[in-house]
Image (tube, rainbow, N blue to C red; front, side):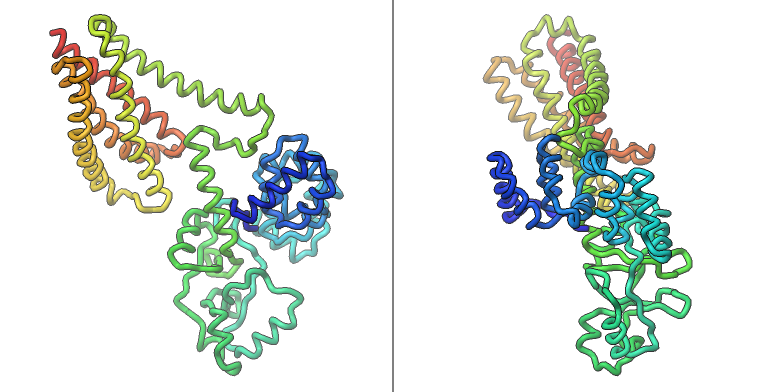
Length: 453
């Protein structure tokens, strides 16, 4: 199910909903909520605190509740599911597409999920179990097993009649996939090609035999890259025996890209589990406390490094004023590189083959920027403190930390990935620790050497 992103229409709808809710015009809220797509309703619900969220949820038509639930973040969805009885949950989810049902059934209470499964026919149950057997972040977990297939030895006219006789056609239609007698994937047929060809033309004459399929175990991030590189609307999914088992459509990939972008942003702040802006205060406090504790340890390391130069700081108080400048500039330089590296790793642009080139590139960028900004800062300090020796000290320290930050921005995510640690989660904290310690030690060490020796 495609989750909508904020646009002019969405913002207008949500603004109207907010005004009606604040003015307690519940009739207007009901009309608006049941007149917009489920994904927009989900977005609105996520923007509300718990009491208002529940009040609006009770106004959503039962027929639309399944679509809304699928579009919600897991944490918000769980909070709404807790307030629904078994019959409501089964009624809301029974008509969902199989891939959407697979996403939500794992979050349902056991009694509701069992009743939902029992309400399905055997074929649908088998297809659902097939999807549930895969990791949710794999091609098999993304796919919809309800796929439209054709044989290569029939003509277009037969295919068109077959499609007319079906009760329904999976949406979006995308391309048709060609299989052999035992279900082996053979290629795809583009709909536009089929529609403009002679009805007597055989499928084997217009199918694309070179069109690749996606292996069921492929990670979701790689699937998204395949869709981007090939401009696919839909793609076939096969098992290790090349049996066609389902298809992935562009709406599923939009969700993958959106979710991955959100996770990346949240992880960099240590909030990867906080999907609900209005989660209980104590729950959010406990989650954030862990990350704050980790950050406190890294700050104490930097403070410990400063402690070695206590006598130097007492002797020259101007050093206390200038210390944050060196650490901050190194941190910013490293963060720029770290962000590019994490993005490159996510898109597949960074690998073992180009790490050395990236390291050389970032080193040279660090050197160029260090020369530029060390010169600027040295001139500024000379005018401020009327002390050229102090200017030399801070210029040298800044140059060292800018280069160190750039190199750390490359090496830290590489090392973390080799240790199977997500760079987006731990990279920022480690980088800040490195640039703080290098900045403080270089600045105070050079000051001790040049000014007090």
